[in-house]
Length: 518
Image (tube, rainbow, N blue to C red):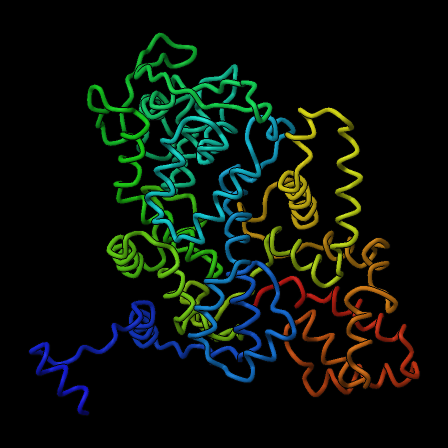
């Protein structure tokens, strides 16, 4: 009371209450108006697994689970997760896939520097670089691809025999949520964009080219910018000058790429695209689906909330961590996953099941199967492919390129069609289930003599303690009463043999719960 009176005397006004979470404020009203009773909050185990996968890209470890269960301080845990070093790793892996268009071409390692690019992406997250500055650097930086690592976004998309149309398509899709590629060959059949609009944006990139060079440190690439400001639409005689989608043209004497970066980051669609992408990542579905397909015909599920969040994002300086914290702290994010009767999925009255992404799945397999030792051996064998060739060893033989191959492996498990699961709605597949259940390689990693399971059997002496630790490791929660009774009965029938624990581990590893975020 005394502190409140002192605040009034010093400041001349009553102390203000902390601002309510705008997500909570909106959905409290929305659910009441729609007569929806939202799902009860997720328990601490469910919340921690969900938040760890969404922020760190990995499962929580047993010691982390026990520590959190003892405190249940969700606000403190959210801050801890957002500042964790693994969050920067996950951000880098996720944005590497987004910026590379979910593709990994064989020539990519000699067109860009994966170590420099991924290292820069980690620093972007660690410093919480404003998103507008992040995108501006990706679009306008030029120079050496190690000293100016943001240039790698442009370098990997440049084709030596094609005009830079791929950069136009990626820029519009990733940073504005717009699908312009249909306007490359003709006026867009379903939207307002014309062919001249598409090539007007492409003209900003005209004149960019990579320059390979030998330096004291070895082979390197420099992104050269010789802006031309004009280009001819392929297979036509039509010339277009660099112009933005609203008709604006770069000022005479100004760097066209910096002007383009300004047009993109000042566009109203800029904040809508990233807010929608982040909302889709955390909440399981975007306001607009797919998250990168805004159009005149798309109708956001909650336009008022989208506008509110975009305004707050801009006001907050376009920093990502405060925005992520707001979503993580909301009641909608922390809701349980039990289906609510008569509530559409778009109401966010409960949390939908979300399949793990390739990055999350790879991290899950590496942790639960203790694959680090084998991956190290694979990597050493992989390095031998390049022998003494310094050029190929430097370009292909680094851990960051090897990491991309591992993500492709995980993507192939999840989406055998070749389409990245982040690009399309995905809910698991029979092929994935069969591939996991019948994988002799994976099953061979579930052994009582070594690895994660061996650690558990050595640390825990009782069947009850071992079972609980296995559940913590794989499902991030203790077994419920029915599960405990059933599995302990099986272990007892097997007289506590180590093979019984291998069976339990293998069954839970192949469960539906394992590869979904709840």
